[in-house]
Image (cartoon, rainbow, N blue to C red; front, top):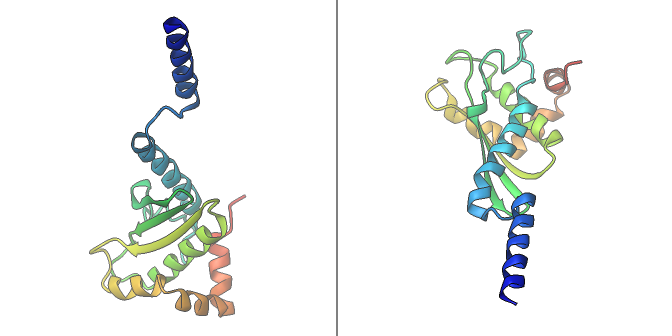
Length: 160
């Protein structure tokens, strides 16, 4: 009986290990958060700059390290993005933040809360811009402007 119990225990642990379920939640969580962060980065890296024919990745406005994902609960995640404008007085930083928000709201396949910030110390009015791009009413009002909406649409359009 002891031998059967041992064999059953070994078989069960092997099945769990092969399925990835044997990892504890704490051990599995960092890997899941890294995968989600890469998923987010893959979506935002192709966003085009509003005034240059380059992507945010090419201009180093976003990088893998600028994306952080935290678990809120089993089904929802907090996505934090810290982007770096190309110059400290970039007049389009708010528009870039808006493009990031629109793209992720449309494309992220998991339930999320989104926070977007300018990297600390990289813009002369970062505090004001951070408030604007994280205020739902201001974002909604901006997207009602047809000219602004058209610019955002061109920036978030997937490349062929």
